View 1 (cartoon, rainbow, N blue to C red):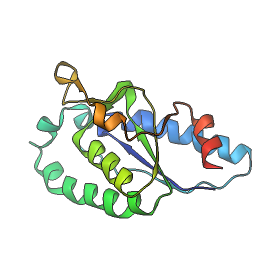
View 2 (view 1 turned 45 degrees about the horizontal axis):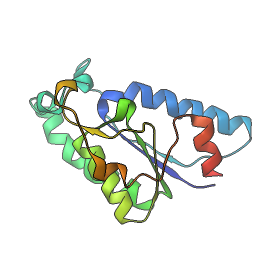
View 3 (view 1 turned 90 degrees about the vertical axis):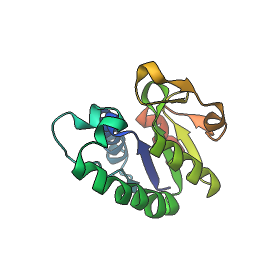
Length: 152
């Protein structure tokens, strides 16, 4: 069984948690043990995680903690996991997730993504397609049971 690190924008923390829970349920139904490394999103003010990064950075607590969280995710979790899963709902990649994607590629990890497109930006009006990021993704896998098949 391969270990998997999940990388995602904070704005998708609820959807990512649901995806991971479905993955765990599927694994448990097959008596499989998963090793999952997920992002440690902080519980800030209600709905702060849905704000663009520019707005989140105005929050002093967020601004003081985000660098350490990103560093921990990159240099501990991404480095030791076998597989990297980019949860890029609707194709969205934030700056930190894009960095994690490139780090996983440099480390030679197998990289799966949730959505076909890889879009960058802070909010929908500022999105553009990032073809270089897409080249690093080995396969699109948008269902937990399909990801589980690849981890076995």
